[in-house]
Length: 135
Image (cartoon, rainbow, N blue to C red; front, side):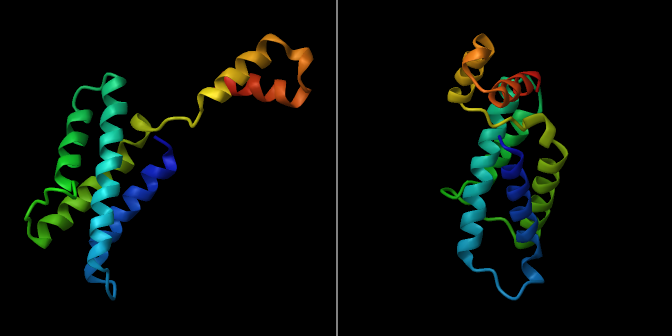
């Protein structure tokens, strides 16, 4: 998952906590928050699970169920504030375990082609491919 998505989701969670201090956040904001948080935590679950983490995927799955916008949990506002802070903090603390490089299959094929035939490409393309290969 791209690191920017993690930062945006955590920021939305922290903004949900600041609801009492802001003039007005419409109800649609919390629906959007539920959708974004659910998608991010499901993706985090999948990434952490495929990387062999033991406890983190299940925490992400529990948070995805908690934030799902289809079946809402009737929790008091104070509890939601705690959940939002805990979920946003968890995203910040575990971002390195679930972040991924954004590399499409086309870029990977292009990199392989460049690394096999450097004479057919420009020096800039070749050096970029070699640099990406080291990352």
